[in-house]
Length: 311
Image (cartoon, rainbow, N blue to C red; front, side):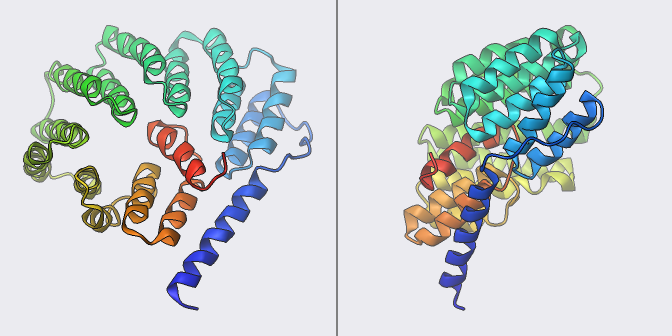
């Protein structure tokens, strides 16, 4: 079997598996406590069996209508299915009934739900709540991470100016943590330079983007953090993609984390630009194997489904 036929076979197999995962399921039997049902449902959800999971969440809510974990999980499953309005009904209820220490996670989940629809403005309302709560607790790391999270939503929504403002706020916020080690200072500098590189790339400022890529590499080397190395080919591939260097983007992104749906969808788009349509379909199909509810999948999954004509 030659490579092209093999890739086509893989794509068709993945699409068939995805289609089967979306088929309505018979309700599962009521087993265990509401919390147990949610845990069982979350396992099914990770496997892409959203209807099976939703059946269990419904049973959990029939037993305990105020169980915020069940509303949260149902909202996530519905977002992954593409039922965004229905998802937010559950997420709004989760926010209402969640204990105070769980509200930030509920707000974040609602923000991601809006990101799945590309509504950065509404997402920012809920991320702002998370930022304010973490800042009030002087959780500078958490507050800075929230800034970067919202910035990424803005950036992938096509708003690099607001993204820059939030990335800058994140870098200034982490500076309020007075006991950062030198390694962590360099790690956050790497993130800040990376952010500026991606913002510049989205603005069409290729030369400025490359300057920030170079500065990011220096900071990464000084951070001496092996776990962060995988983010560098993502950065260089991202910058290459938005500079129109699609072959260069492919070369870099194929060295990056292949479990990141945004990387996979960028690879699909880059292959689509350079011609091998089968390769593009392969990467779009791989995106649909990932059932995470986060900003990267919020942009990758709807785009992949659109490219595969599943929406």
